[in-house]
Image 1 (tube, rainbow, N blue to C red):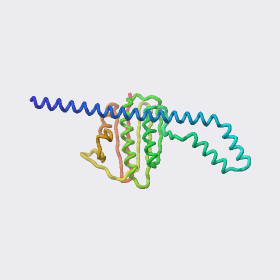
Image 2: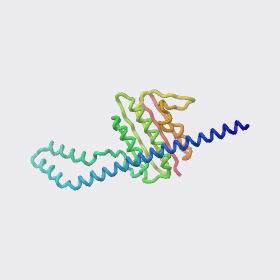
Image 3: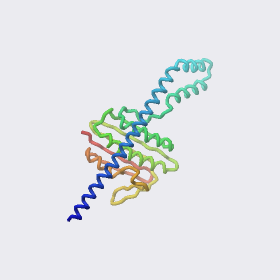
Length: 234
């Protein structure tokens, strides 16, 4: 009996240790997302102020090209004007700092891998869901989608829909897929070698969803992988 008590105590201690370790890791990731988002916002504001300062001069140049029928030069100059403002890509600007931060950070990583992004975000500035929870859910799902899509040789794309309506948060992420999934006891398992450093996985997302009476549906074929999440926010 003493041995059993010791084993249960040890198990409980180890469980708390790993839970705290996971939480610290996710909070660190959350701060990284916020820092990235702040950098995007600051850079965009600085570029916009600089552009507005010289706007009259830029328009004078374009007007001059149009007057002498140099349409191609005018178009090229407009392209340069546009690039000078949008040097930093902001994929999501819903106003919800948690969701925008994660999306902009992760989708920037995807763009560097030449993955085409389709994004629809319709959420309010504030949603009654813990920042930690949304970081875990979106961060893990996007990591999985980016990793799976980057393995495709030709067609690389990720479609993301995030909509909040009538206290329901709907998330749908679909991506190209090479058609290899590992199942264990009817549950999808990670194919990553370094499991500890790759987030908490789909099973742990389901644990978070229980707090919100949420559900997660997964569907896939040989070419596409789709995850759909519905969360009921009180």
